[in-house]
Image (cartoon, rainbow, N blue to C red; front, top):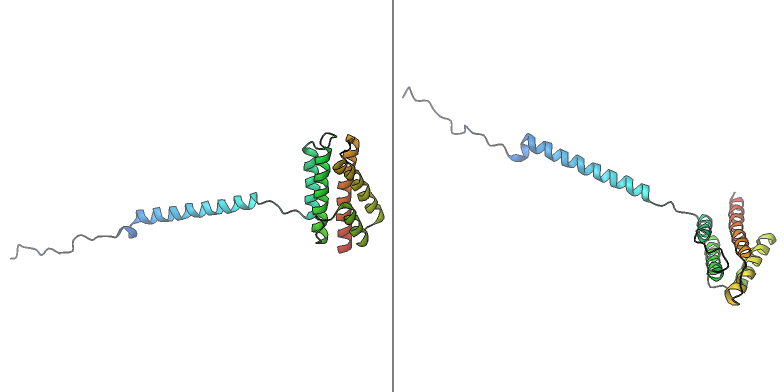
Length: 170
């Protein structure tokens, strides 16, 4: 019996796969890759998020888009004036938090008079709306210069009310 050695019954040791070096490398690589993907998605979403515009900035933007769509011509005058009316009423509705979309142009002017708008601005808005009424309802023909002038007046009205609102808040 001296020549015989004892053999250990536990000569092979099994290491579970989750404790191996390869598993740890792959696991942390996948986790790192997923983190990079999530960060890139977050950054891309932040970049693509549109900046919210104020009511005045949105109105000016819409008026500029109207000009770019080539509606500032006598052939598309009726559609142009309908769009300008909608833009101005939407702007005033956001500005004063009063539902003016359902008001007629004359009711809107009366409301603005009661809100103590400056007479120059009211006069300018009155001229824009009077030109619009002829085109929208009487289907009169519009001169391209008149359409362009009314677009400029609309833009200056929005710009003035933005500056007036800022001076009142300061």
